[in-house]
Image 1: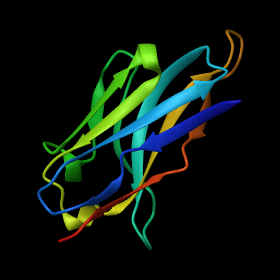
Image 2: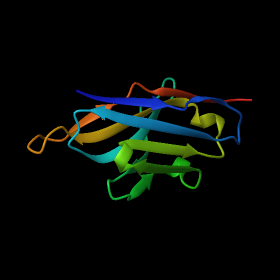
Image 3: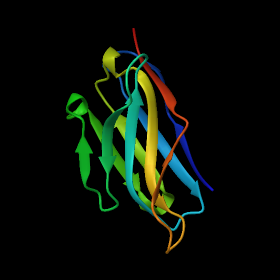
Length: 121
């Protein structure tokens, strides 16, 4: 019904940059908050950044000043520009989105399948 597909992950050296993308497709009436989470091996999933439909952003303290979240509402896409990457940023990154599938529907949260980001020399 609604699918989220992330891309842009990979292997990067410390200090490098990556840009993640997440496209939402399917039955979409509106998309509210979009967000990026990450889960490192053996740790709980944590919020990295989120953005409202109007462009208000919020970041985890660990990524403030290094990561930038943005979205293109016309393309139903959210981005995460990651700069000055550190080994501790290594994790699987997931996007989620609050989606209404019709004008009368409740908003539901949908998740992507995740993309691996590895920061290592």
